[in-house]
Amino acid sequence: MAPAKKAKKNVESMNSRLKLVMKSGKAILGYKSGLKGLRTGKSKMVLIASNCPPLRKSEVEYLAMLAKVQVHHYSGDNTELGTACGKMFNCSVVSIFDGGDSDILSSKE
Image (cartoon, rainbow, N blue to C red):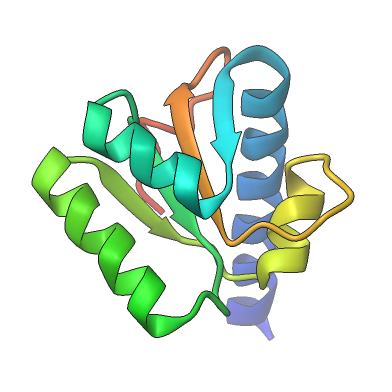
């Protein structure tokens, strides 16, 4: 029971960090604009939903590797990722440009 509780706590802390980024930092939701941010070098971190299609996921990971950007595989699906960002729609890729007051860029989970 302890590992499941720890996993839930990690998800909750990531959700709270993401909420703080959306409030105080700068983040872009969506696949196309996320790729644009990776190509221009503005992105600092990329979050990918668990149910993102494999081809799309590998393309984002490849561009992130070229741009030397952190990739976080979000444990929830695209609906949960969109909700964690405070939006009422699905989102499979979130690109963070500025962390704001959050410590999401320095965390290693």
